[in-house]
Length: 220
Image 1 (cartoon, rainbow, N blue to C red):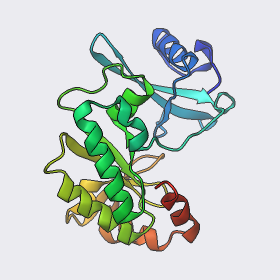
Image 2: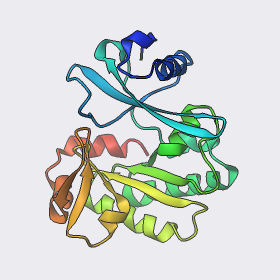
Image 3: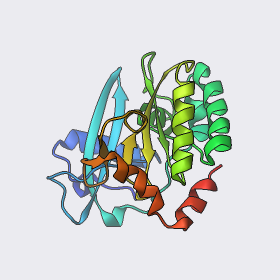
Image 4: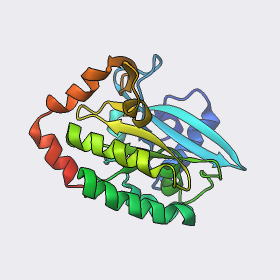
């Protein structure tokens, strides 16, 4: 984003607004979030997680579209690896390599691992942290291969593997739910969550344009 002033931001707490401004002035990113009832149609809903004195604070902010100068793709796991604990780095490298080989896609990160990377290693991760993965398989077969690898890998992983499978539409579903057998799955989007029949989730890949698959495979 362009450097905002506290007055540019839709945030009830002026102290929190100044924290957002300081973060952006430091060249650090904000993330998109689901649009809430207090967000206007003309503003972009954004989020930030800060850590100070061991206390984590989540900030939801709305910003005018004119302040947003760049929208980047999710951070790849291999790009964030240097900010992760040493025990996580080898796993991250091996998992990325195996997922590329099995499913033709590179895993991304969000959550604490992303903020650890974006914030320059400021204590977002702790001993009980999960690794939140975002995996955008290009096809239903690739999605099945990704689930197979996740289930086989989590037993020996140095952390709990959490996260989502991203559908070609941009919707996300928790990988554990997709690997289970529930008839209806919670699917998330920029407009909030909804329940989909399992068959509709898998049908999403069959309805996707072929160009989407090529863009996703290129990440490997």
